[in-house]
View 1 (cartoon, one colour):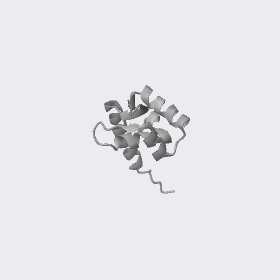
View 2 (cartoon, rainbow, N blue to C red):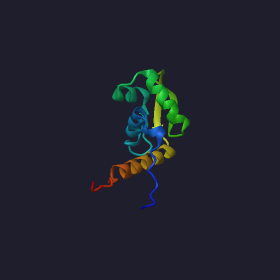
View 3 (cartoon, rainbow, N blue to C red):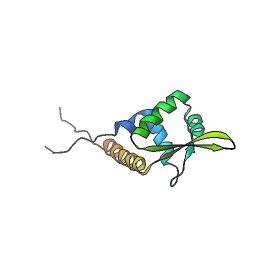
View 4 (cartoon, rainbow, N blue to C red):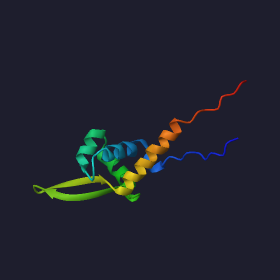
Length: 108
């Protein structure tokens, strides 16, 4: 009998929409940031849906939201924090562990 602990996936990131948001953000090199509209368009989300999921990720300190004016128009920028990038990397590593688990075979 082996004494292995179950692999736990980060539930904040594991939710499908938040996973898509984080994947989009961490795939950007360095401290790159994306506009709210870019994320909304690329993930085909409603404004309310995106805002709700961004709030959960922001509350977990996985992303930072910055509001600025560009040519006298408001623009909202989203970027993954260092904490968010680490949480995503840990999530990805744990997901790989889950995918590599070999089920026990029985000789019934």
